[in-house]
Length: 367
Ligand SMILES: NC(=O)C1=CN([C@@H]2O[C@H](COP(=O)(O)OP(=O)(O)OC[C@H]3O[C@@H](n4cnc5c(N)ncnc54)[C@H](OP(=O)(O)O)[C@@H]3O)[C@@H](O)[C@H]2O)C=CC1
Ligand SMILES: Nc1nc(=O)c2c([nH]1)NC[C@@H]1CN(c3ccc(C(=O)N[C@@H](CCC(=O)O)C(=O)O)cc3)C=[N+]21
Image (tube, rainbow, N blue to C red; front, side):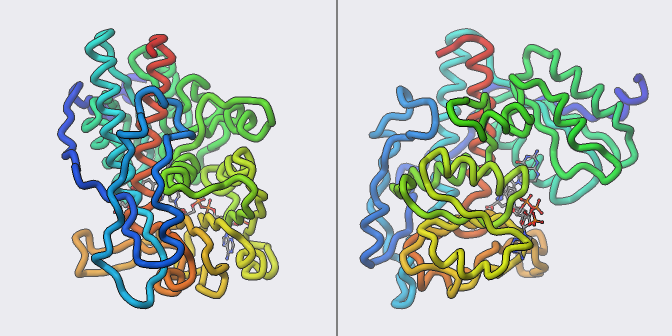
């Protein structure tokens, strides 16, 4: 136990430290001159997030679309997840600040990172930085690749019991020798801000049941659709990928919003035929350029969750990210699309902060 504690690296972020820059000219959509663009310029209230009293319509107002990057060929509006996420994070920061002033408490997020994966380290770093900027306290336990399952479970139990921790995230994937199911089952249901606990997932799947938390990436995808004024009800949606963390919960969530949902996976025959009937395509696979222009119905909306790193010495970190969708082809066909990077990724982090705030509000009965 002692040696485990010594191996932990615990990083506490200071309390309120909102150093996010407020973008007065935030542009949620870099829309271009075309017939479709007018459909997605509305800025509806955040129907999918539970803060309607705070996130007023006026606060979510977007400027008219930019036409700066207009080319003759591009017809799609680019859904600017980065700006939308920034706006959401500012709202969260102001809620955290209100909470601190009112009850002297701030939300707390605990992250468990096992192993040395560079991508996981980057994601976790970004999440902790985002917490710091929103005034959310964060604590991280880092364990080596060869640690035991008991060490992870022990760290989890201590976070489960810690009243200043309102959200717990076990960064996935875990090294191969771990039983992911066993570990995720131990995360307290009330602190499961990732929404991966089987009870939260089960409640998401069942009619008339409400999960305590909705997984961040799927929730971010829906939020992007809402915020871009894209109707889900009655639409044909195709989700490519059926993983527990993205594809499956996204398909459940789209159904909850009354879309007719088809799921495409590695064994699907003729995926193109299924996908090209969809009004909304959400793709979460991790295969670059899997979805070609020919897979898409003209005017469809595409949410590209996939991120795949490709070496690029001209980029800051020596690599750049590409999505599942052949972007250059898709923008000539669809009405709106999320870019990679700058689409879903930033929304995942914003939703994590949202879930953590929500959890703390519930813990303190703060409205
Ligand atoms: N932007 C963000 O916030 C996030 C991005 N991601 C990214 O999303 C992608 C998916 O992540 P994740 O869900 O964890 O990945 P998984 O590897 O767990 O799942 C991939 C899914 O894609 C399916 N699949 C694989 N190949 C094909 C194919 N050729 N055609 C159709 N379906 C296929 C698999 O099908 P089967 O089930 O049959 O094997 C599986 O369901 C990754 O690139 C990941 O980096 C993930 C999380 C958050
Ligand atoms: N328990 C758990 N919860 C997760 O939510 C989880 C996880 N494990 N394991 C890995 C995936 C992946 N994921 C991302 C989060 C943010 C970006 C993101 O912010 N991407 C930026 C770019 C970041 C960069 O440049 O590297 C963007 O797309 O614009 C991407 C991917 C969360 N995941």
